[in-house]
Image (cartoon, rainbow, N blue to C red; front, side, top):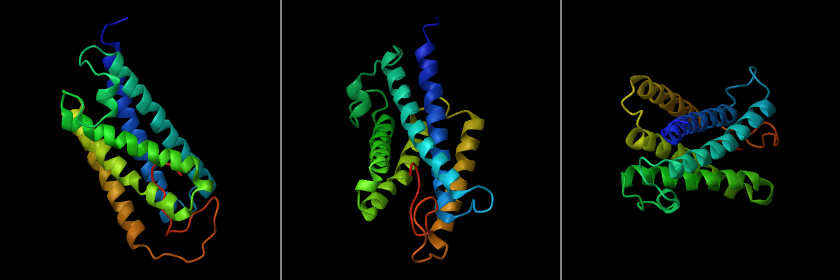
Amino acid sequence: MTPKIWWYVARSTGMVAWAVAAASVVWGLLLSTRSARGVAKPAWVLDLHRHLGMLTVVLTGVHLGALVADSYVAFDVTDLLVPFASSWKPGAVALGVVAFWLLLAVEVSSLLKRRLAHRWWQRIHLASFAVYVLATLHLLEAGTERTNVAVVLLVEVVTALVLFLTLLRILAPRRRGAARGGARAPGRSAAVSG
């Protein structure tokens, strides 16, 4: 086994976690704007959105574990869980740390959704946008792929899509008293995990 295996695992899981988080945000926005209506059933979109959110948490966990296992930069658990504790690119790492904690808050609130007041769940779920922004900045500031033209282009295209769908979500007329369950009313927020 190559001594760089954990570095490769950390790199790849970081990139894939970002991509899956971005996909979850896009699916959540498609769900909340009803843009997928006629293309896919709302229940299917919601299930995919939820699974993408959980997969983001799992991949981020593997990313963090691989960083601790890697010896190139000596990260310990504190470096990866406390903002600005890392001596290696403290600002860039802190962006990822804060994104991770917000991701956990969104995911836990989604798992407890039936026990939370909808208004509280919705407010916590809005942190999904911060997760996307912070994770994207973390990728571009700390990631070794930040100079890769394909990665930068992917980030630009996905960010443009997220911005477009967010504007659509904000500007779309909202219906009152829309159905609960599989399909959310346009006035409801769904981003990283529902």
